[in-house]
Structure formats: structure tokens, C-alpha cells
Length: 140
Image (cartoon, rainbow, N blue to C red; front, side):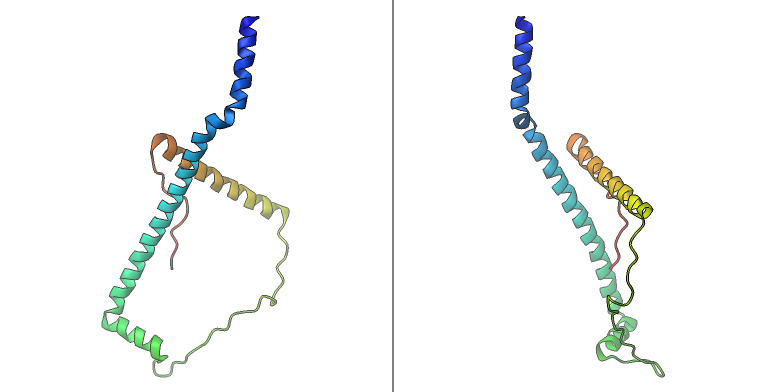
């Protein structure tokens, strides 16, 4: 009888203190998510930096200077013409509603992405391993 009473008391106390016991894990999880998000942003910025540096180096060449002059002064080659692109209005074509299959496919992709993010956070938090992001590099 004493054991049962002790176990019941222990169970009630653990239920009451459950949130307090799990708070450090939640804080660590949020910090790991934030760390990964900042690292992904840093990687994207570094890729953009490389692209901009390459463009700057190209703009220093004679061909790049000619391109810059043509862009700034709106110059064209002989028999060339300048075309101003006008953005299309949103009312041009109504968008058809997506089918159930397309929505389910989107849900699956979102779930897969969510699971991948959680797996990366878990690896960082428990194993101190940084997994690369699962998205394709963006071009500017």
C-alpha cells in the first residue's frame, strides 16, 4: 500500500512539474532553431556576396563598362531598339482553384520540409552536427 501511495504521489508531482522540467529543452530547441535560421541566412548572404563580387569584377572590364554605359545611358547597338516591359495586370487571367490532389501534394511537401527542419534542429541540439539546408541555392 505504501508503494502504491508513493508511486501515485510521484506521478502527481511529475505531472505538476512536467512543464518546469521540460522548459530547458524547449528553450534549447528554440535557440537551435534560431541558430540554424541565422546560419542559413548567412550562407545565402555569402552566396549573394560572391555573385555581386563576380559582377563587380566583370563591370571593371571593357565589356562590362560598355554594358554599364549602355544600361545607364539607354544606348543601343546600331539597328537595336529599347523595349520597356510593362507589368501585367492581375486581372488578366483568373486563376483556377487547385484540385484536391494538388493541395494534398502541397501538404506532403510542407510536411516533408517541416520534418527536415526538425531533424536538423535535433541533430544540432543533441549531436552538435550542422546539417546543410535542404533548399536549392537562390540566384539574384
